[in-house]
Length: 80
Image (cartoon, rainbow, N blue to C red):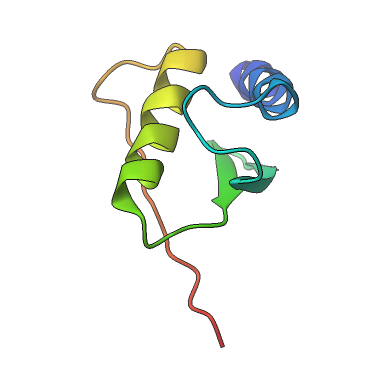
């Protein structure tokens, strides 16, 4: 299963640190295994900083060996 390989790579990267992403920026991750797709989510601390959000996206694509056109979405969690 491709999703399990991505999950393993992501966990190892979180433990080892994301290159050029401040320590403590990555807060968590989850994988949702579904019938037709797996959804991998990464939570970060600083959603307002587009440079950090972009860096996380770029590092994920590189670490997971995703093609440049791979769909990735960023959802900001509204604070209450």
